[in-house]
Length: 131
Image (cartoon, rainbow, N blue to C red; front, side, top):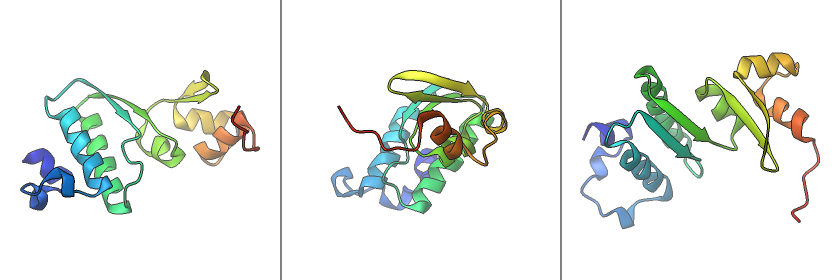
């Protein structure tokens, strides 16, 4: 019940998961991944497709896990999410790690206002054609 409360799903606990929205299902998946209180959690795009309220609930939950000294490995395409949640950020381009540092260090090194600018600086402005 505690995890359902943190994810804003207590009032929906009796509903069948098949009736949940996509964002609700993502939050349930997050709860399932963390129900056994692991020391390390791998979260793959945990907020993709979520409305702003759900996204904020997940961000707050991840911040709470960090305060409990949990290790969280997060993959995301949302640079503002990485900037908000991560102590260290790795930027991968074409399967290769091209940068790894604290968000503030990356911004300083590349004279950028945010991680999105760092990402664009490192990977180029052009949209790549898929081969």
